[in-house]
Length: 303
Image 1 (cartoon, rainbow, N blue to C red):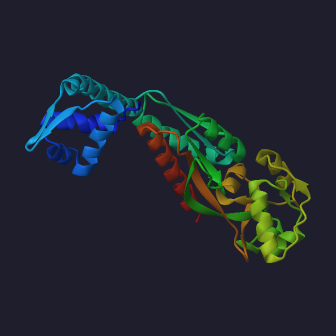
Image 2: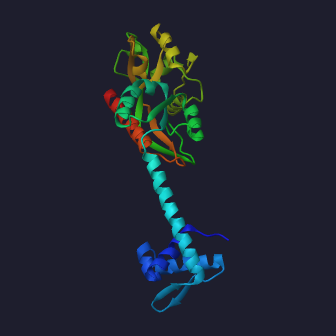
Image 3: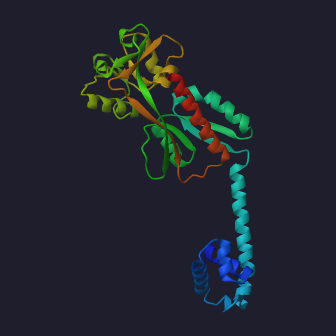
């Protein structure tokens, strides 16, 4: 025997009003649908709940017994729903988001300041790591959103594309390759590059552009750690490819220069990814909105 909440709700409203048509109007449902729900409940219980007559309905003895319990059940459900909604929006607790290390360097300080001013009793957790690790954290429910490059839409993930970020060639200031404001993509084939290994999200974007342009890139070093790449660039005669904000983070100590890659220009898509199954309270939604606005502010500063 299965009793559905919607069946109880239709039954209780008809019992309260003594009329199925008025119950349907109150519930904003078609009258035949309300009648079907009540009939389904009677079949599930194996008894008539109403005596029907021309002017409406009256409860049977069985209906009287069920009505008192149905009211309590529906009241408890309404109270539980209200409590859960309040809990989602209650100050306190923890909001956890993830981002790539370079973006954390650029955006975390202002993000934290804005979040704390609005939610002083809520802890903001910021995880950093490669995109694959952040996706695993999101799937495990340990973070509620992740800022990622080139995210792949899949079942259970909500992908909010927020911007496209151009790539730059980065090298030591004074090197001819980065002396201008831009550099044709084909020139990269002539340079000693330090770029991530094959399969890395950035490498996939660069390799795809190379195939499309008919250019054969020959990296000299394959490495992902930006802080390890910087000393190689600072010595001269080696270059890497980065997004503008990442380049600015890497070059914070000075000594590096960058040229926009053109012909073709290469853009990486940036997204905030959430899990569709994970409910988000007001603090989490606010943190995601703040992260989005900080990222867009930083990207606008690059143009």
